[in-house]
Amino acid sequence: MMKNLENKIAIVTGSGRGIGREIALLLAREGAKVVVNDLGGSPDGQGNDTKVADEVVQEIKEFGGEAVADYHSVSEYESADKIVRTGLDTYGRIDIVVNNAGILRDRMVFKMSEQEWDAVIAVHLKGSFNMTRSAAPYFKEQKSGRFINFTSTSGLIGNVGQANYAAAKLGIAGLTKVTALDMERYNVTANTIAPFAWSRLIGTIPTETDSEKARVDKLKQMSPAHIAPLVAYLSSDQASDVTGQIFGVRGKEIMVFSQPRPVRSVYNAEGWSIESIDAIKGSLQSAFTPLEVSKDVFPYEPLV
Image (cartoon, rainbow, N blue to C red; front, side):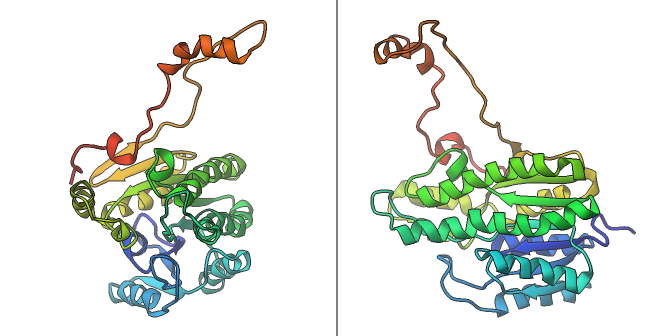
């Protein structure tokens, strides 16, 4: 029986643990040959351990799949080329790039250091660009390819203490949309997913108050394995007409997020002043977006 991703070559960054690991395993079960990329660092990006990627490769081989490990960091432009080169040298082509690698260095914005900002932006946003830039010429040449990137409700909605992470993740949504536009004529798609799942990174969330403990208990109900099927679908030929979209996966629920569009406007033929804007503030205010965090928008129990 033909598998959905038979003969496809996939690169999955950050696939040694958590969501990335589940994606790599499912893509391999669906017939893809997988480059398992993972630096093997801690949740904040420190250190490295090659056995993290090696163990996933071994697991794939044990059920009859094909995989190769890669240990380069996505945050370096030249290293992204090496990750792509691993796929090309091993399997002769690449078809799918899943930009999943990430780190967390949470801090209130008035305490965040430049280094904490730069480190998170480098892995998430610059890393996603690096991998996209490296793979895009090959996708363009072969007139096919799939980019699947990872955003977060921290950026799409908001979250306390994650200015670096939220900025990176909302930036990835913009990167994905323009990648979809730039690559559309070459039959290449680009989509992004906001995952809700218990993972090593989420495990760094503080649990000092009852509300924080309740939030984490909800997250623990959502397995990283819930994310993988949508990634596999977006990687497949069946999703050739799906591009430029922002999806969410929360337990067994899949959602599509809206994207920014004007919701209300006002016009003044004479131009605007502080006073005239203040006079019509109420006309706009009813369309303002509330200052919310993710748990305010998703107060219900995960559908698992």
